[in-house]
Length: 128
Image (cartoon, rainbow, N blue to C red):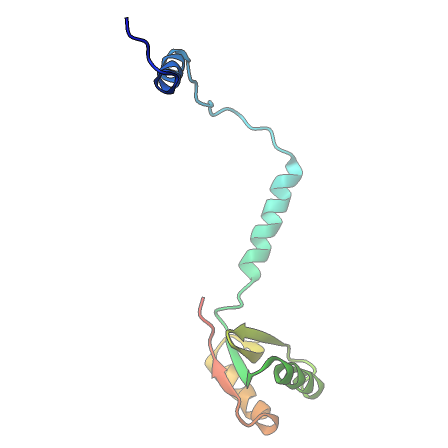
């Protein structure tokens, strides 16, 4: 009679044991969840639908290094207190985008005022 080596016996033993095990999948039953979870989820959906950052026009007033971008944004906020602005990093440069306009016409109206202080400003529409 020939004996299998330990190297061959272990996989054979594992196969024999796993073939005899009755495997059951999880059944889809009722999940109990807190009411507050649904309220929180509804709030999140409402907030997400209100966020429309990428489908609006912006005015780019600067393109360059980080230090100058920060200074440009500070200068802009001093001059135009009601218009918000942000710094966007696209490797290797920084951009300063200001405003959030629904239409290009609205952006162009504001662009004429912005160009008095920032002559190289231009209109951009970020991609989604």
